[in-house]
Image (tube, rainbow, N blue to C red):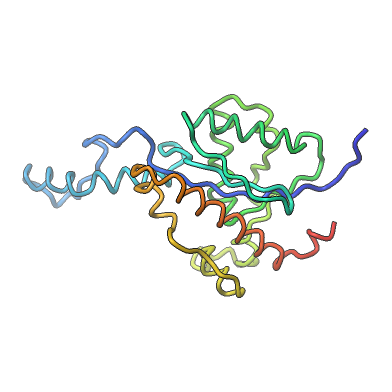
Length: 223
């Protein structure tokens, strides 16, 4: 029988607005727009932005890639090759291959993990009938197995105004931080076929997050 041990999974998602663009009727036009010409112009000016914003909504957007690493192993980036469902199945298989299902102590590490990454993964595990993945994931916001660097840094205040971006926190702690891209650019980069750049950006986020959590929770790496 394999002994009980601890595993640390650091991961990050990059999302985009999905292959389904919003329709004109999906665009909420301000009530002070009365003339049809003005309304149509407003929709034309805002429909692309609304498409990009779908990448922030787990029920409308899609996952472009998942950067993930076990403990101190190299970061791997799983990229959408055909469909999001295929990506999720490969992520599920990656976790099983790493022995996740055999361990009793799994720590899921990320930045804004409770507010973004975990919900996106959980929703897709349910959507695509990935029962094993559904059982692996901690879904309670303050589960002790969710190591969210943003929440840790916010401490006990949980004041929304005290949220700190990964890049800001990284530089504050003396690390290099991000370079070349930020999350707001992923949607358009995906449309433009800049898949390598997105994957590199995602990989870097995982490495940054792992550096930060080693500073905030150093004892976890001594287990």
